[in-house]
Image (cartoon, rainbow, N blue to C red):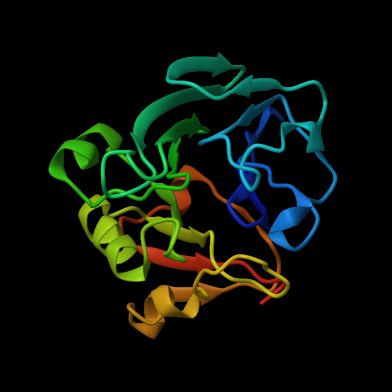
Length: 215
């Protein structure tokens, strides 16, 4: 499978036979434009402008924006309700976490998760091989809370998202605040913005992968 980082909290996930999903497309108010992209499905964690710009995704994709289970050729998708804040949604509402299974790999996109780490939520999410996690704080969990989720979930690959990149108009932290919580040997900074993974690449040791680009 291939993971492409399109900026902010947006990724394109592509299964080996070509089935693809775009997660949380954003509009230019974020501070930069979405790349041109098409997909078979779009997932929306919540309806805020920086996560639900579905019209930016070509290919007439199915839009998944509610709790459900959904199957595409070679891809299983499950949407799990959570909260966008630490007050059970009273401040910012609900958030959908999406679990994907592609090529034998379990991927979890946490959306704009804002609630504290709990055993109940962790039990629902497991197992996770690849964790796409917000780290910028203010509107989501911050770096320290994201580290707690990583420690509890113990994924093979952690990919931070929803952090301040060059041009970002949002008041959120840079990714370094998160990566500094890990020993250097467990952090890999890529020049490119995509990663190909096979099940055989996963060895049970957690690695943080930061994509290149606007930083």
